[in-house]
Image 1 (cartoon, rainbow, N blue to C red):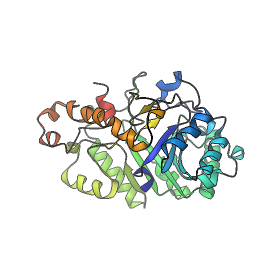
Image 2 (tube, rainbow, N blue to C red):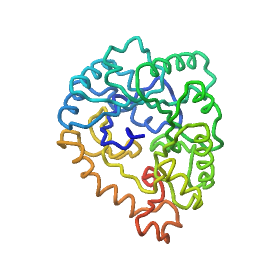
Image 3 (tube, helix red, strand yellow):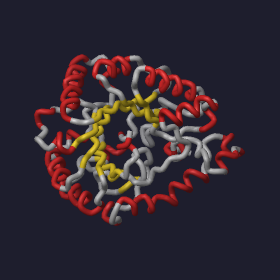
Length: 312
């Protein structure tokens, strides 16, 4: 999944959403300005000159000037990945959509619900995306418990061949507790089985978050590194620009840096956050076992996604 590895600038157009997923890590941002201003979006693109853009939310397509955003990206010859819950009204998009958006990452929450009206719209919009973008990737968020087979039924129906996987991350303010590495150390086997089953159905999986080395067996690690991009340290730091214009080093981390106009390009953003990120990686431990772990001291494994360490 090359689009996840490129030097990409993430921009949150809004943190408002037409769904209300109670595990969503962005809920605490709703108190900030509702939408990024179109003039600021244009300045971000012209100033930072990223290779490509990742449009995040909330739900990005509910931005009242979404078509203007498409026009700006087209003008600057930028391609974009769109993160969406697929409940948009595609009739409102202008002709630049298919020229700018080449990848969509889909939140499958509607698939897992029993809302037939929403599911009908969701399926209709999936067909629209299949006709207008090059790549569709399902974003699967793991909650405590077992994996939902509806995900695979959906992928079979629409010939979706890519899934990104991450545990549900706790929100700093609402404090959800759907998933806890400390309570669910058996997740290593569950992840391995999920990836292997997906692969058997011709679906590739990419593990987004850094995960603890010790929750996997040697055989599981070898397989997941080869086939799912398993990693034990993160490289976050390129950042996400919020609608209120400050930058965080990663969508999953809640501390904000300066506003975007402090930087001349996204490499400067990464450099700015490096010291803070390294400190969080190697000066805080999530588990007691990490304190005596040689892999931690050799900086092979940071223990888990840094989001969990911000809760310490």
